[in-house]
Image (cartoon, rainbow, N blue to C red; front, side, top):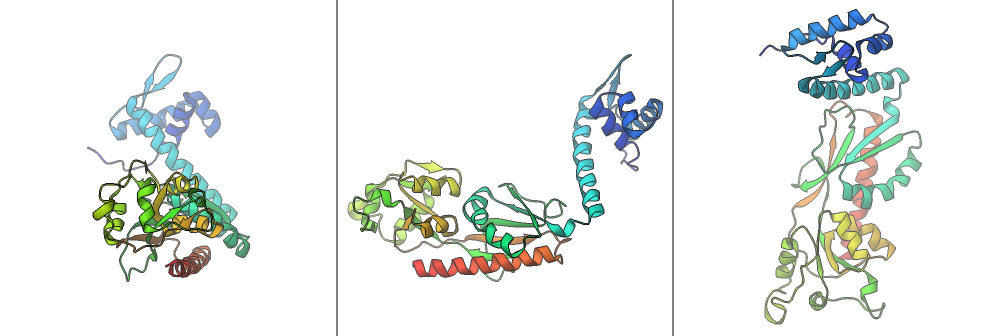
Length: 304
């Protein structure tokens, strides 16, 4: 297997693949069709496999050619976007934030007006995605990720706590509040499995005696944000990270059922593209989100 020692021909190949024609690619690149065809031929020789099937009146990508065309097209698109940003000088003016779906919808987006009011010059771009993020990707400046955390980690933003929450619509009398004994009266909404609920019930010594086997774990959800919305809709009592429910709690859409919390090892970490660490936009956002997380921690302590 020979490594590709030159990128020569990739632009011509991508253009020809996009147009399905050497002639049309030549028009875009201001070359002759023969020059484009030669560049592609030399690229094929360097790769060791054909990229096109050449017919008398048209060309067609091979299976490997199609795969390479997708990869080269994506890379060239990123490169062109980067060059355009540098030419415009707007790299400092665009803040690209990667985070998870639930955190984006239930925590970050509702608070972003406070940040944009402080920094109206920044163009905010939020990518919500639960897959791992590549911090070396130029399309990522900072990432907020949820998962296992350790004290002393410099990236740690907030250590989460799971809290049982419910809609006031579950109450016959809005002036009342649900108690621990009421958990057996309603569906207990879960994120994927009832494991966290069982730990919480065990922590409160509520798995034995008259309540043994009486809990309803029949409703599960794939994301914390969806779970919180199910609780807002009155579908049962949900056990959710406080950060996901705090806006709904503050608005009165959800109430906290007070009980002992089971140990929970997850939280939020603030990750930075190492090439962007010193940029003012990153430092501004870091300072803002640290302050917001500290304010949320105080409300959590106040909620018991």
